[in-house]
Length: 338
Image 1 (cartoon, rainbow, N blue to C red):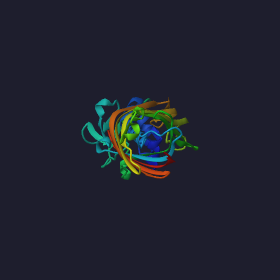
Image 2 (image 1 turned 60 degrees about the vertical axis):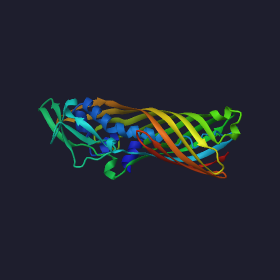
Image 3 (image 1 turned 120 degrees about the vertical axis):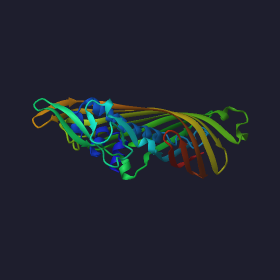
Image 4 (image 1 turned 180 degrees about the vertical axis):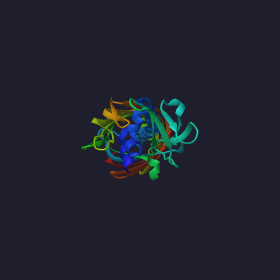
């Protein structure tokens, strides 16, 4: 469960530390090598998280009338595919990394997978007194080692109807601020029902609308209590931003309705490892590395959506499935008027 929390916070170096890696040796082998590995290791996790963040923005194409509202609790989960659990590590792309056993190019775990059996690499670094030195470290596992195959997110969401088929939406996660973790997540959306503009709108059995939505996550993780590397002001700061463009169609029945749509997700995730890291080179010497590196991943993907919505007075329940690069499930408990 700890690894899921770290992934949700995009705590780059914390994930590496908690996953049996030796960041001291990794940085000593070179910042470029550490950054290259961290980017390949984390990218599938952050990409899956961005898909999970964009589920359940809508549960109908029928826009609410002026003053109509809905308050929802939304739980999403992106499904981890097998091809996201491993990546190809080719030591020819690294300056100071070699596998202890086997060929120079091997499949190793991402933050979503597991190394089974354990994989060791040998890192080279230059000691100013003793010359060229080597050290072996175990490559980190991911959440696959805990038999977890879903990336969850959850929101509180609201929707308010305006005139002429326009509906405003907002979602957020209550701010988390502890000694180690700071996290905030919010989003805003605009849905417009095109069929509301037609003269025979009330006679049509279906509604068609379009949605544009933006979601942002900002998080930081204080590493001072968990890092094995001495230094000052060690932390991770992360920024995730996504856009969703969606075409939606739904039925217009009194109790149970079905909806679907075709959409496009675009997003960027960036995490910065900040602070001073005092990396040892052998026994007698060390060097300070300040703000070692940043890693970035991007998504650009088409998705399809199928869902249902059950209305019982003020209470509504909806569930949906998204087919995309990361398939996602979502469940919403909704309360509202119209």
